[in-house]
Image: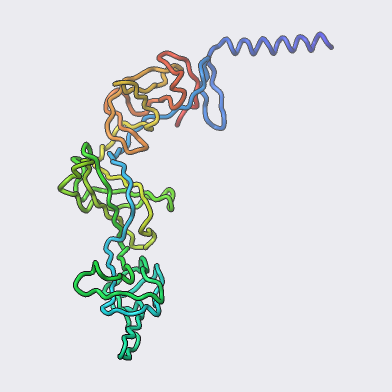
Length: 306
């Protein structure tokens, strides 16, 4: 019996050695075919045909599209608010009451009305404080509340000198907010300043985002992507597959179980995918990891992409 067990063990070991000697086998892992060789195990991806947008990434703070400070026409003590911050008001709605209470006169409480429709963005004065009237110069008066139109919101960004030539009024804009992960808000470039800042050489650009549902709140920051062009049906790769060293731009394609270094010419970059204008075809398998050890001709094994 012992002799039979030893014979079976030797037979099994011989089969394993025989398989290993083949140098390359295929097997299935989690439904994906693994290309097996003697090399290192790497992550892989595929080049593909797709539209790639050229984008300039910027950071800005959201403000109301239009906003108006509301002042009292007379001085007096603020006795009551009729609205809270965030409330929607119409033109001529009463916002608050003041008590003029001048010596020798007996006034009833005077209402302060909204001159525009919108949302109450901020209340500046606490109840019980005295406010000054807007007579002559508003700079000398105390604003009571700030009313804003947020059906659209505005974001001002600064575009550096080397990029401003690519930005034009009417271009598509995509905005991303931390408060809405995974959601993209769309808008347009509304204004490009004709003059750059003399110190930073950056130009101010205003973009407008649709906010008909009033979901975006003024005061929060946003990542703004100005779309300056689109390359149709371009060969594209995930941008992390590209390797930059000195003046070279290259990647590793996987051919017959080996890494092959390919010098490429890049085009548009949308932040996720990168256009390859020359050096790679669509449908090729490319390396996505282990760039510190990869080299031309190195044997690799990887999950075959579909």
